[in-house]
View 1: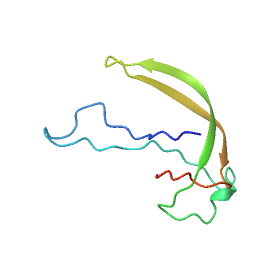
View 2: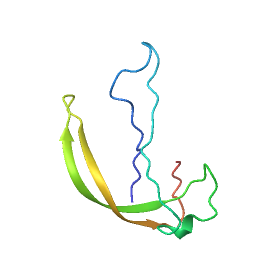
View 3: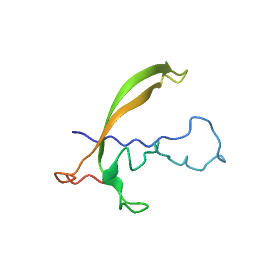
View 4: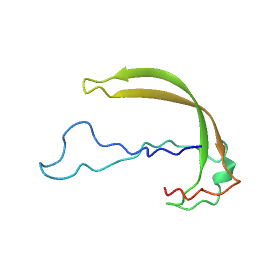
Length: 88
């Protein structure tokens, strides 16, 4: 399985000229009923989660960028194996 950096830079110029755009990461929320394996995790802690999603829409912007809106259907907490040296 190959990991992709999910960081995004804002599409709209909202910062002062000459400053670098800050990256941000998409997020989603789950509760302990949906994923009990997260119980005991600390703020800032990392984990591996595999997601199965349905593509709900596809949009193409003027800049040529294509964006996919996904509906998360299932997720699994990865409990075995090493992180293969991946950094989060």
